[in-house]
Image 1 (cartoon, one colour):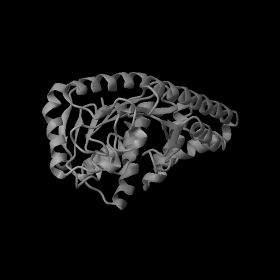
Image 2 (cartoon, helix red, strand yellow):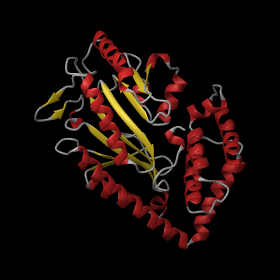
Image 3 (cartoon, rainbow, N blue to C red):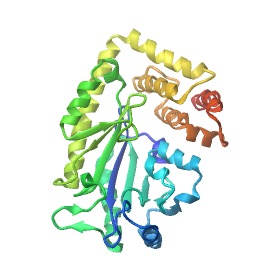
Image 4 (cartoon, rainbow, N blue to C red):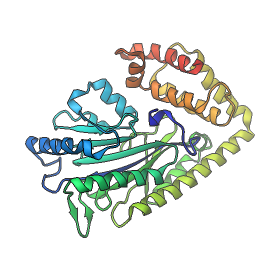
Length: 337
């Protein structure tokens, strides 16, 4: 089963975890500076070693994918929006069937290796990404500096070049008005807290991404340990806020059941409205208020609410209006399944 349809540790608050490393080849300029021939050289080099990497990874040229498939991968957070829109550069990715390992080639760096899991799984993901990186290191000549570590296109990634992140669902902190206080605390601990697609994006449906903002002067273990500590505190604060709200259960139940009722009986829904409803529906399911749903159904509702994956589910392209009509039909289908 694909990783994003599973539920993991602390999944009432932590939707998913990701660990990403950036690497560049020593003999080729960074993607911001290389020529088309050099970009192709990077692709050929990676394609040649793909069978030796293992993990069921397949080489996929980005130009061989239709736009809908690319956007569906962005919605699953498997590739970045910038990478999906990359039409000029020669770009490709290595991807396995579970889609929990993805290597973007010629994004901002020559290699962006990402591993994913549902729930809070930072330690396991760190071990997996290091394991794959060690295999790559034997086959490739990395750009590395004795003092500064791995060299990257963006100076903020120099050092370990590792970014770890968690996607968290914080509806109770939003409802109690404590969300800004938590955001400030997280930022004060050397972490970034952003919208669901990272830098420059807004939170949607009370979902936030927390990640480290320092890669130089820290070890991989430091990065994971620090993010784990912060995430555990955020989980605790969110669960305390949920307990507080549950004391005034009439107000909370009213919001939850209204959201569930709209989702169950609406005939037209936009993606943004659906995300807001799903935030309350997930909260109600996690608190045991909504008995008709479980974690895996809620996870499917989140995935197939999104425009590209909704069209993938239906099996044909839909314009914006058609999606708003089809979305509640698909939501009902998943809820009854």
